Image 1 (cartoon, rainbow, N blue to C red):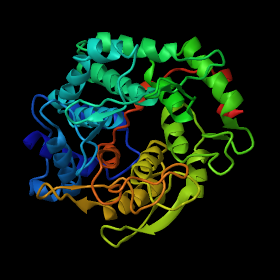
Image 2: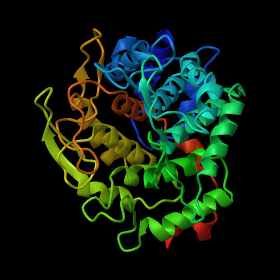
Image 3: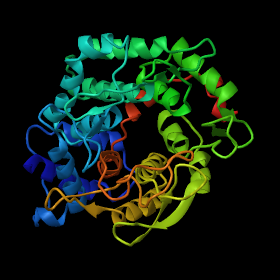
Length: 395
């Protein structure tokens, strides 16, 4: 706990400007082993982000004995994506053993689950590991991103076999057109090609080779609007043609991606009254129906603005996210961010689950922490030295 307190104390000084070198900030925090730099001689508790610390403590306490975290309070389901985010957050705070708790769970199930499924881990399961369902490629790519960060941070090769298996399986999903199939449904049918998952996989698989070149060719031909210069989520659906997270994730994943895509995310921006605290919150919706504030996606936008050195935009969003925080019902002196501010629909027309706006969620809370920690989990896979002629977004 003292280590975490000191990390957040240091961040109190580091996050004054969004234009600092975040990689150096991150390295300085993670690799402090032989003491800390001199700090001003005043009360530590006055200098760190107490809200962020309370969020971090809540996430710590959500980890179960088997290493997994449920996705929110008042639920028993576990998400592969949320657990990958949790491992990344633990590492960003220097809590390597807690990250290993997540990785060990999946590493121990290579034979019983990964091979049994012919590749991939389940997207969802109960907290005891039972009732695994659907294999979602994008979530497996997030696990690979977390593992890549682990090896980079620690220099430990403990999970090399798991990394190789995940990468080879993701590569095997590539179609002749360069796109990637989205995984396998519970009934055994193939999941269609999903832009978000494809660009996540692009980041997760190291380097730049024909696999990556094929993805960029597919995106250029099938998922890029040359007039608006935006990635397309659902080409066949005029109402849900675009999706907000392709703006933020696209910028965080691709080198030299145009900053204009972040400005164009205004099309999703709206204001809602948060159902749990009555405050007006401004932020971003999943899509252009603008019926909710998606707090996870809004935090992703803040991080993208920080990466683009657009400090005013990032800080404005972060203030809205502070207003959106709520107390946790199961733990004293801890807070978190719900998934959304109010009842409504997710991407498309599907209604969100019952407690999406009334309980803290792992994903929203962690993306907020990434901002406080000045840590982008996608930075490591972003530096691929893509040939200029392959960067279709610049033409």
